[in-house]
Length: 471
Image (tube, rainbow, N blue to C red; front, side, top):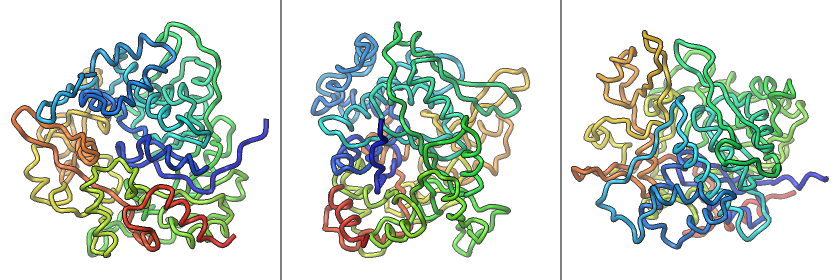
């Protein structure tokens, strides 16, 4: 069978719910690659069901899940007819961990199935899902849900996705799939899913999604390409100006006068060496314009990945009021996006958009009670007695120190999990009335807005870039 045409544009899989199914479907309907963010879909599904599932979209997707009783159990746990009200705290979901949890796996599989299903509904354009290698504990169950829904691509960054080709091979055949999990102080741990055990029967084999590894160095691309066991189907080469997390500079971290990481010649990707690997690649981070696409083609790339322009379009999952403020300030060039080396609990630099009332403000950060109740960025570690614990630099400092880490590691860390959830209008309101403040991220190059109409759509972005480029 001939391989389908490769997309010229890849819509970035941004944040928690920013790249939701509506955005991915709008891009895919143009024939380009629409991508849903696979991060924390279990929480977003659970919270939207507790809101009453406005429009009935999630229930429509779950009605098509191949094993109805699994979807029905998820609905029974979380769906609130008519919605529970914004002043009612959301019911928690099972947290990620090495110990098996059937309820956690069912929720993750169903949530990822629903998001990809809705993105693919009623058209034949390509749809992908974006995962973070850093969140290893979530990967097998989440990816299986996406495979069940027919995802065409899996994109993976924030680490080295060396085990994902094998995982996708196994999941498409409904075989047990596992990935290794890094546990501080211990080796030999993994997390996995057994599709037959979860669903009660072996389904018909499915098409395996193509894997695009998101990397920031040609050395890493070469490492992944050298073996059939680790080789992806292509690469997205990301520069440091892209939104969200970015790789730290190679070598010792140096900060400029504004306190941002300094990138130098060692951080520049040798695109000729990437091209020589013989796999297709796309360029991301500052390429989201017609001229950027032309530069990518000149370097031998298939095209570009575009994030921020889609994050600010009508179909974006961002809270509309926050999206409007971001767009207004980006348009008049007053928006400050800081590549902050301290914000993220991961230790990777993270782009923080400075918007009043969000966690970008020191006073808002200091007023927020430090807690870690979602835990996607927790990392496992071995306790002295051999048991496994979990810690996050954004949790209470004294708790983090009791888990064996120095207090300075926790300094300035924001809770990305809660902040990004609040950015899409699903922030927790706690029983004492406290409401989680949002955290916003965007790329540092806002030139993409030039030539786009006010309140632009995803189709406007695609047309602006493709029609403006000179082939």
